[in-house]
Image (cartoon, rainbow, N blue to C red; front, side, top):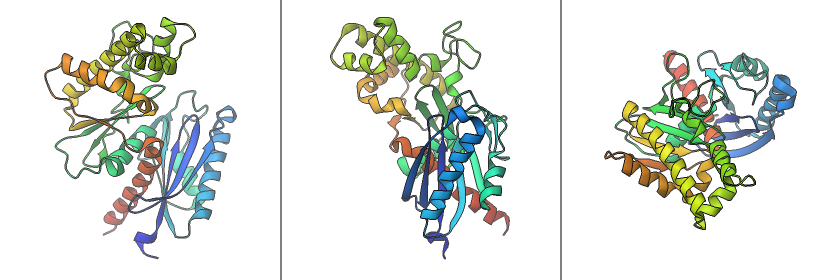
Length: 311
């Protein structure tokens, strides 16, 4: 069996679902599976569903599986493959030696990183397909919260404690809305889906983000103004990141990007109004596949590094 005919497993593990795929070396997704994340059962239930998904993907593969990559919610030590910290979205997940458990159960090399980092790798590898970057790529995931990852020359910049790229917790408004990280005024509290829901309820108690965006498209003045404020706050955060990192471009992904046709032009307009410098934005291309594709790429790169170190 040649290396090119081998498969790699990529897993995207979040608080709602566990998505897995079987990928070839060229990034082709051969098979996909999804499991519900049994958060009420804590760590043992999550591990059970994760292992079941991996077992099913191994059974599907007609070729050798060389390695397993996992992008997990939480702060991850990518060297040890351990979950350093996870919120209550994954109860009991903090401290889980994920790499060791997976390798011990399946006898295959495993590589673990944060789920947003994995999605960023997936987007820069199979989404953009650019061949030349003059600087790092900043990936921002807009969903329930705001996540981020920095990719430079195909590699994640992790920082000293694995927290590089956590742009959702840059301080946007001093003394602003409290954040679950313990700070007040984080970007996440102004530029996320959760923020849009709060903004919508402040207009009409029965509204949510979906109703707000629909009303905006219909020209409802309060909704239009609310989306403009949302876009301005997000633009301010992006400009701060740009001035600090000077990225080649921003890739905007996450669940909220599905509605980008409503707020994208507002965001571009606010960026232009707030800064005379050009800010390159692109919409993520891979949707909810980005994490599993990126996780498989982590496994491919990990195996390649091991091979080079033995030469």
